[in-house]
Image (cartoon, rainbow, N blue to C red):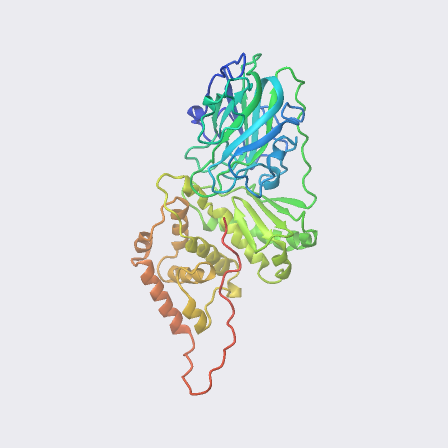
Length: 491
């Protein structure tokens, strides 16, 4: 689905972008216009197949020009400024190294572009692609020919570019307002009217802002920036990149696309496609059915990517699951499949949408992970009894808010004794940013602390009696099986 001349997925976009006139900083300037076009993530391809905004090209005036970071910190996972004019685009929706973006949690920054000479600019085009809040674009565009007295080619934040030889060309904001879906491809054209030109310019300044003030992951994934010379050749479009050799896509009955990428780990390809993929395809619709909420539609595109050198176990950002191959190689016959089921629940939770709601409450991490592990251990693999608390030592360390499988055990108790729909109700509240501890009282009639104490009393009643004290010399008992999580906290 394409969305033109408005922010992604927001029919009320009109006021989101202001186009201003170029003044003396760019000679003979026409009034700038701003066009945007979005492609929903489940329909986006590496072709960047825009129809209203010019597609990325390989012969624009930014090719060979010099980008520099004037202010702000570049994220270490970014591909750096070199990807902005390398005449390439990403092959999928979450490729950090194929995009430029500022550091997580930062307030963005300023990018400068020196074209090397003064040209008649007809349009400036920016492109981005991400499955979630890193897709929209929010920036102010300035331009200059560099001839004004006191011109500063690299004004840092805190300095108004208008005071040092720059003119504001336009303000771009393609965010979806209160919409819950922002992912996909975004194209922006700051352009002159048909047959006109923006002006004679050499320098461009992009003052870039995060797409969200909540959470750390609101830095736009800029895939390419093009500058079109009004006197230049007709654009030659960027060729479509081939899919990585180790990428295999499956389409579920409901249209969901599930992509398995073992490009870096060919030794895991057979296991991923023959063991993991059937489970993921079977269980994703089941997990979606377990976690409904009003007005919510689960993602229709999921990527499961294996990284050869990644530390840890697995994590999820948006709709992309990253798997650490070293750990998986050691656990293929153990917890490997279950760990991915855990991450699939995170894909479906989509609690990040709550951060964009006015007045939203922050969800407690222990409950986010505990709910996920409850579904894993008590629905996907109950036969493994992986969340059971079997020894007195485990019991003594157990807390209802310990997260992961221990909290999963606590939730199982509350579900069994108080509310069979507890998980669905907790999930809906967290997805909508409405979680509070009062919810426990509303659903069960008891505070969560009291439920925790009751749960522990029930656990203790099922444990074998503690050994009687003796006068024998103390010995070190063998270690109990761990109850710590096998999957680290996800982003």
